[in-house]
Length: 288
Image (tube, rainbow, N blue to C red; front, side):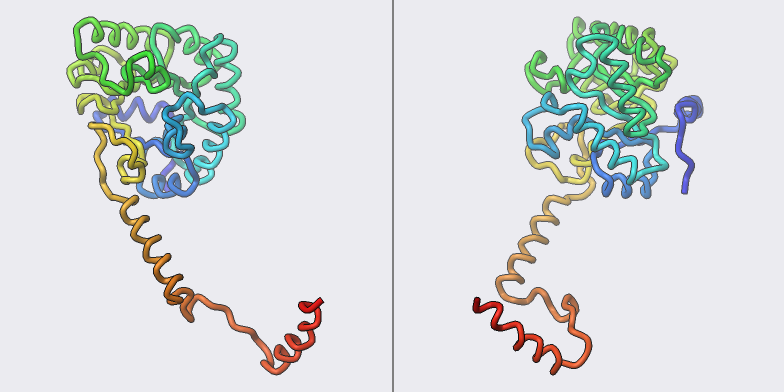
């Protein structure tokens, strides 16, 4: 079993030009698969709001939901670097709130870092969490928690004006003390520029290849979520199709009494005549 990485290992990977592969998931079962497959990091993301709970976005996700899922992921992947996603409302009111909720993640879910969305607007919260001794992953560009103000889940930084805002956010996040930065849904040129200028690891999701590693949702890469698939996601297997077919086969076999077959059944042990006598003795109780 590989030893769990630390933030220093992530910096060494950047120095050595080794790409980091991390994945977003929300439960113990899939976390165990990811650890066995050798991912470098797992993000227990607030995208659970859509994938697990069927909401239209991430805003309804609460701290209690996030921590419960993080706890499950940690149990399934005890030796993988785990990032907890601070949900909407858990760091927006004050720096004190941000630190309190980050501490909850560390104490209750045994995470290795927390992630929060935003740049200039949340720099004070990043600074406060960092000064409290915790590792912060920044996240700018397409930030799902504020997608409504962006007009939906749309790529950011495609004009000079919006690109400038993303670069300013990257600088603010770095100066506030974030140890890494995630860029989502931005042109590859913008990500490449930020990657070149910042000394911290810069990761991408829909941001091109010129960065220190990639992130993808397990729900997208494994074909589990059918409602929406981002342009930047690649489907490696189609679990949804396999699951539907499997359940169809199950329904068919139940209807035809092909399941359970003999190999799925238990048999009594002992003298059959004794059981027959027991069944006869119990009949009056059903008649009362």
